[in-house]
Length: 114
Length: 113
Image (tube, rainbow over all chains, first blue to last red):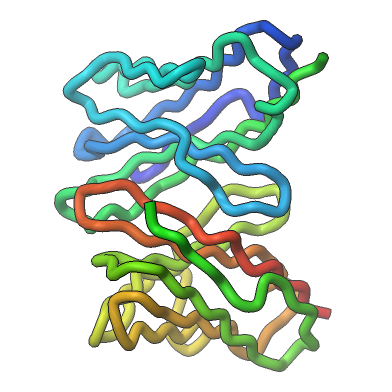
């Protein structure tokens, strides 16, 4: 019940295309859903996050779509660029009751071809 | 966001030895966490470092193997004890305030021979 399932495992997109990564969770007590971007040799960096009281959040080319009834959320990267090539992790936490412990998805390795 | 540093950034160790990893934050934070990321894998929480008390370990991780200290609100250490090649991983600390997001340090890359 603590799992977060992420797909696809890897993704190849052409420059200018849309990258879509999906995550599903089981625990309805999760109340915070961040996405992290990790480049090789670096720690994960927060990209964008959403709480379940909204269905969509957009920051620049990055958008989170959230479907509370389906217990799913996704990251959309518009106009994907080669510099977006990285590993992306979704995560979920119960920030209020468990002090913010993050449960991570398995990760998606994105490659944007020029 | 907080600026987080980790020492060492990488190390190569012999099996049976121990390594202590330091995590320093530039401001006081409520929560500090330690994660392990095995090669090509996702992040797994090892423990929550509690200031002034014993760390809270996740299932599968024990204090004898991964002793943690947190003497104040800006510093924590993780020791990997009696290392084996299976301990070769990236070890990451993260920090956060209650009900807010977490920020990660750059990680410590450990190779055990």
